[in-house]
Image 1 (cartoon, one colour):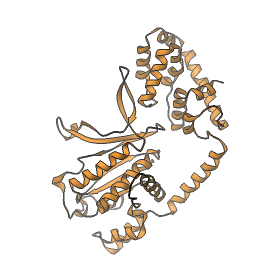
Image 2: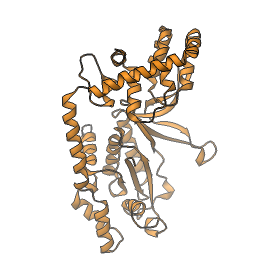
Image 3: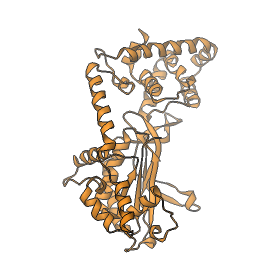
Image 4: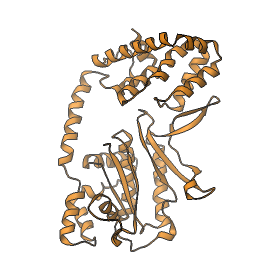
Length: 362
């Protein structure tokens, strides 16, 4: 089960309040390396790739014919190219006709979603939830959590953050976003027992129910101890080698020390690619005789496993245009069926990092 972030939003948020908070999130689309999975025309070829997240208008057919919405979507991290589910935030998420100043604390949405209550209960009728999609613990989990912390800081009890998150992550996310704010925000109320207790006390529940809510939703330290220990142990490994994880391969450069397991895996992967080239020699030969445009188009059409950025495809296409032999470097990647993040990181590094590709060939 991957990590996820959910937001509960009370109908007590006015349209103007929501738009003001939403517009502040747009600043962080230019600060955090969030990326969106989109079809982009790269040198005349429609290519599925990662592009930096930005606000846009797009069709919202589920709302009616010709309906459109303005918002932004994050599919992953532009730097590492790790992705998970799409998570969107829309300018018009809050509609004026739903506004109810007495709607209550947004925490009611988390209670209905995570505890033994029914959404049919009248207490939960004026709170909605959004996000709730899997981030799988990828780097963009913290970037999105930072934006969620900002929303709660701006809208107070009208927003509640919940999901598969820890106190340490909330503190990390708050510290991250505070680097760019003139006035620092506080961590979510779930991380501060006294603030959270005051918030729970105002809810329309019995004393016994409030105790269960407090115990269930307060973010304490126990769940974070394993995470801290894992990060500590990871840090010890990182100090031993410059390149100690598959995610590091993309930044390999000559002179870096690399973990022997990773180096062996690189050479094995290169050997697999050579085997594919030999087995598919006839098709590779036909591609070599075709135009550079058709070679590029074929790679895009056959690729089903590896997601790259638009600038990466531009580099690959330029390489193929300038040196037809280079198609032999990229062809095998379209034949591989990648089923893990480690494999994806290895293939990206071999496709994009010339120094690492040279190391794998040695």
